Image 1 (cartoon, rainbow, N blue to C red):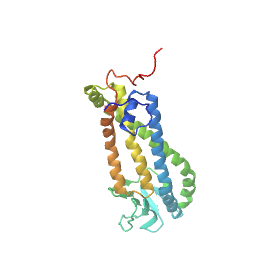
Image 2 (image 1 turned 135 degrees about the vertical axis):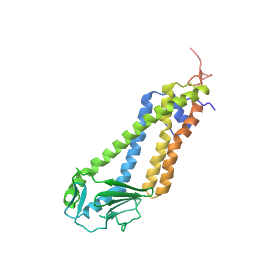
Image 3 (image 1 turned 90 degrees about the horizontal axis):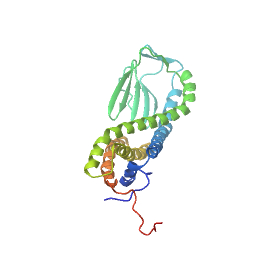
Image 4 (image 1 turned 120 degrees about the horizontal axis):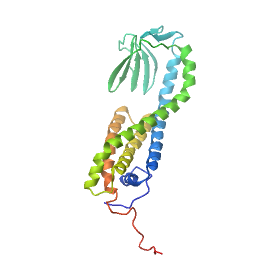
Length: 267
């Protein structure tokens, strides 16, 4: 099953992943950074086209007075009420959480008197308002604030997602490297701990690329939340599938990195 060693660049095939084991660490870092930025960009794009219009509409529908202070929401508008709702996100106010304003959105934020309920297909979570926190919940204060922060918030999302992915890949590669090095030892593959670490880091990228497409399909309505959740669960397994397949493409101990050309004359 051995194959000629290729230049490490694309991590979408087991052979391509295996090539990173003997490549400079800068090459892996560069490819990881590119993939991380693409995933961060896809998430920011999704938020911009699907979440931003809903948030803008909700802010425009807020009353002129209101705030969250001392752990309580001061609300002068109608309750329960739907501030704005789309296919992916809904923002509602229900001071007593009576459950009278349910929407078909994938995620619904329901603001109550002392807390906010977040409803989704997975259930719901409850977050209490901090008692030492004061925040305006009126149109007059939030419209200019939202208008100023919309562009930089997208950049912050891209960078935060990219940084989180890079850190998680480094930690997971460190966790996986020892068992992969041991497996490579028994399979007589030319791996040490550092090469195993690079192999593990590259094997995590196909799952991220799969999620890049899944986010795009979900944003375009080509995939529902259940299908998206299935793909998300699958991408966690793909790393190990690629690892176990790629290790057979790593050269054996004593094998040269590239076969000699028998037709090339030696001088």
